[in-house]
Image (cartoon, rainbow, N blue to C red; front, side, top):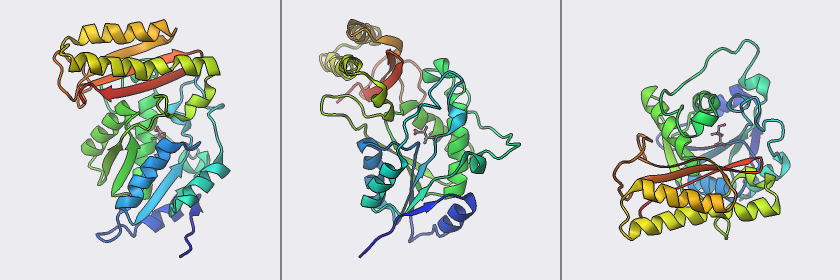
Length: 283
Ligand code: PAF
């Protein structure tokens, strides 16, 4: 049977389509900024398995980029994205304009206290306010039962889960595992910024995480010792560390005693490119 993927540009049309959400029709939603890779496609596949209607949004949200960040150079390839999503039989691609999402006179913002000002929030102070606001708007427009998001953005998921709970949104986030290149680099649209040599050095992120997991397996229980070792491995590859932490997966606070679920999180710059990665410390 032939299947068409429809591109929707307006909020009015998108909302009218998803008002169909009911017990028989589960709506699965994958919010993205486009330039899709296997990580995004794994979210779409998970949504297709569990939902009758699958919607992917492609919107580079200006409000989550700081003044000196890469809004203008953020990679784009809409035609390829459409091809990939059509091949996966996505039902709708929501592709709104800036005027549609932030019309003249726009004034309302959502902030999730505390969780947004630590880790990535320290060096990207407005980032999570922009993310929370756009995702709240998208939830209201798309009205999904489930929202599929990649675990690479671990802090983003924790913040959005809190927002959904605090604001009583009727949706649930389904976190999906990080998808990695064969050599271990976590997939990210921003990986295209890396030179060949930076990309090679960036492998220290996944390598240091694996080393940390081995230390824990070998009964190392002191988070500080593990953090020092991770930092050493990254510094040997000339990565400029923004942070390396081992945190509680729910509160995002630094762990003083480790459990299997304690999360290693890190952000490191190679040249101009800032990469993040994470994994739980246990198996
Ligand atoms: O993770 C992303 O790509 C973005 O932060 C999101 C969730 C699509 C909001 O713009």
